[in-house]
Image 1: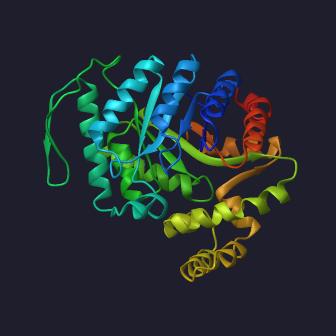
Image 2: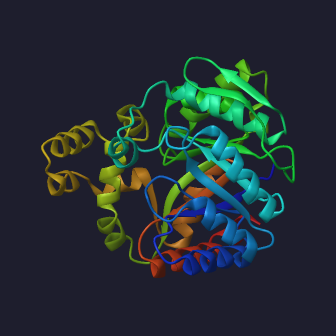
Length: 336
């Protein structure tokens, strides 16, 4: 298992060419993997990753995440196999439940049996990628004699589970090759993650060291931390809304902030919700500061048990590019 790995993730809001060029930049800077989400309705991530595969040679290419609630496991396996073929075995597949407010509700989809659906999806996808003819039925998912009509370039693709929930963390420990854990690096967040993963690993008779534990963190390298913190309070508000609340408490966010944000959102008062977010709240969920500050916080994440840190990059492309470059040039050398 590689130690001290660094990935990056971003929402591909720009043109296809901008996405490809950004991933190429990440490859030149030495990042391990670039992750693109399937969490809203931007350009299709499988297509984007295939384009990136054509234009790169060494960087890993991850879908982080897609969901069996919005894509059938058979279709996920089919698309994953094609991207992995184009990438020469560099593809990584992230599975999760999808954001309820921004994805499932607009599509009229209810979040039912999330752990079971993720377990089923991982099972079906792995069997299809291995070249099997799959018969699967358990009352939730149904596959009748399906086999992919093409030979895959490799018989397995790493499957990651993206989650902050305890039951899904246990599932990741039991069955996944890796776990994408967002913003749980502060206070008691990482020990809780490791406890849940270990519980699942014990059930699956696995070693915790076999799981790529990825700390998925919003990081901004800047010499003006005060302004950056103010600019990120809207994102922190949405993160508190997604929760779950116990995860927010565990990383040190005050109860009054959590309740104040949730109550304001329930009233439809988004500005009021953002106003309840303090500077310390932002620091609980994000790493913002100069290179030395960021390196110290990243070092603590590795010390607590993460294998990989993924920079979750939000904002305009110029700001994303600046952080990607500064982190590679001014933070990553501390971990050589």
